[in-house]
View 1 (cartoon, rainbow, N blue to C red):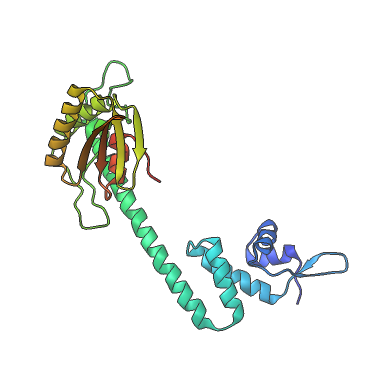
View 2: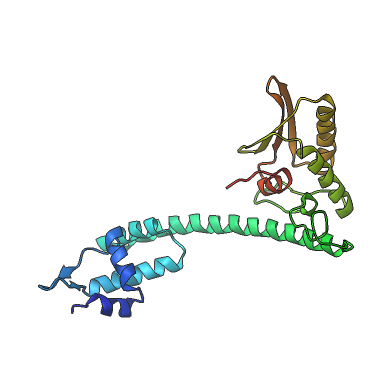
Length: 245
């Protein structure tokens, strides 16, 4: 039995434009055509699309689905199952990482909510008021990463806000930021008082947040402060002002 593309779309649940794209991407083989040039598909195409649809519900990438379809088209089931298991293992790990990230984000939001509830509204909303969600004081340091290292701060909410304000004052002097695999590198002007304050602040930070490590380097280019916490990059991003993908 042959199906025109509109009928295949109706039966498969994919739009005609998606079916044409799948042909271009190699997920569907080139169909036969009528003398008038219309595409004609068979039941094998419908079965293939059903397989693709099931793979899509698993959240697999299109290139992975294309690989599976190639194995599926060869006939034996064992290779398809083996490769699908590998892909699902990777997907489960990916989802777990995403859940950890969401858990950390929830901890940040909860800290902000508690901070907002404890803040007396100012006369006018603006920078410095409790609604200023970009304030470093709104950063929570209480989340756990996927590994066993505990990401936690022993300061109270008020103390954490004061500490974040101290960091904000110091970071206002930063002239360059570089994201690193372990955290961030910050360049400060070579002012002795600034260097001393940075060192003192780093020591106090490690006393309450043991997951941080700091390195101060002074060279001809200025003063470099390396902040490392590979299991807490989201905290570094928020507190020290850099971004990790």
